[in-house]
Length: 297
Image (cartoon, rainbow, N blue to C red):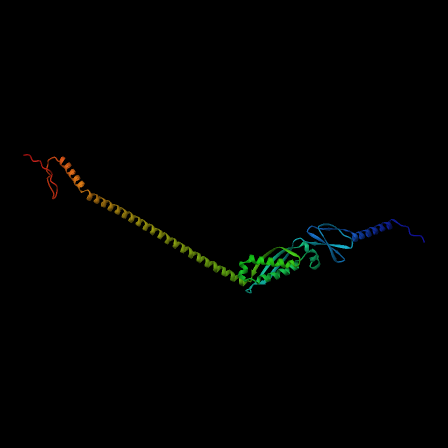
């Protein structure tokens, strides 16, 4: 029986089929893979991890498979995490945790937790547990006044917890930190009363300072007057002592030189006699000296 003639359509169909077969074979046996930046390529062989490829081109045999695993920074948002203080005050917080997978833990995380590096569910659960544990160690007032220390404690505890999953914490952003409305009202009232008390104390201190200043000024003025009076009294006493000493010395000198004094008196009387013009005084008071008389014969 003769074979049917081969037409142009039959030849084209065979070429298309051949191309499809070649494409399927290449797809199955294609050895070239690409690992993008910020990722690692996890190589598996029949489901078992046999290697980790770095960024760039990877050439694998057809019986191995490559899965891209992200080691870039990831973000987990925890909204309304709840806790309770040691004095049984409920508290809520919203946090954002940024983390990444440690490069030396890629195989472990791929095998146990995630095939793409996303641990958001684990991070959210761990963060809520840590928040409850940390807030239970503080009273409500301490939780407010020591917020920086609370954040540090949460950060340290969460780092330790996420290390179990092969993740490393980059940073934690804690926001919307709040207590119940009734407690916040009580806190606001207390703060208001404290501010009023401090204002009253400051006013009292101001008044006391002003009074002390006035007293200090008065004491200084009194001391100045006292010092001036003491100085004047001392000066007067010194002058009196000096005058008394001068009189004492004069008296001593006169007592020791009586003849000199008498001689001086005679000299004075002689000068008076030499200058007398011979006229007698019109009036003589008791005890007054009588001038010499030169009566001619």
